[in-house]
Amino acid sequence: MKKLLAVLCMLMILVGCAEKRAAFTNTDITGLDYAKGFSLKDHTGKPVTLESYKGKVVVVFFGFTQCPDVCPTTMSEMAAVMKELGPQADQVQVLFVTLDPERDTQELLAQYAPAFDKRFAGLYGTPAEIATTAKEFKVFYQKVPGKTPDTYTIDHTAGSYVFDKQGKVRLFLRHNQGPAPIVHDLKLLLS
Image 1 (tube, rainbow, N blue to C red):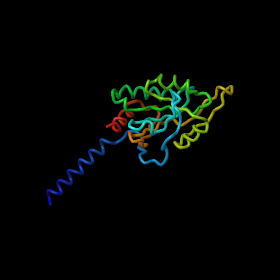
Image 2: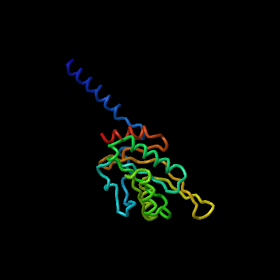
Image 3: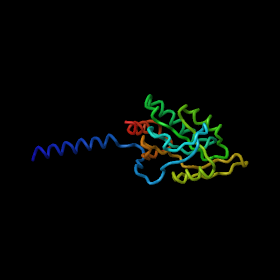
Image 4: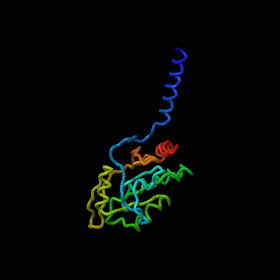
């Protein structure tokens, strides 16, 4: 009986250690009942869904190309994450979903997203498709008028969603935290 108890204690300790190693630094949203997918086009014009990227860890960020701060900061941060991941970065897909389908054309997204990392993809759709996708992900966005009708900005949710290789939502990444915590979490999902 003592041996059985000793074995059980050892197993509990090992399980406890394994759980500590697997702790994410970002918000664990495993099992969330939204952010289940999308149906848009990538910057090459190809129709894509979340299933199109199955087998990779997928990071989904919503923004717009004329964003003055949050979007380029996030994309630069993700480019730094990819560099730190080294060869593992090929198992990660970063998707930039435009919230400005009126100005963010396929051609503009084809220049914007890959400018940060050649593997990044810009996604677009009709205003209705973007609204449906934003609603599915519970992403807030709202036009803020500028000095002229063409110089508006868009207030929007600043975090990113991360999906595991099976296409299940796992994490919500906070904006502007630096690459280290993101690299940590992505490596857990890649292992």
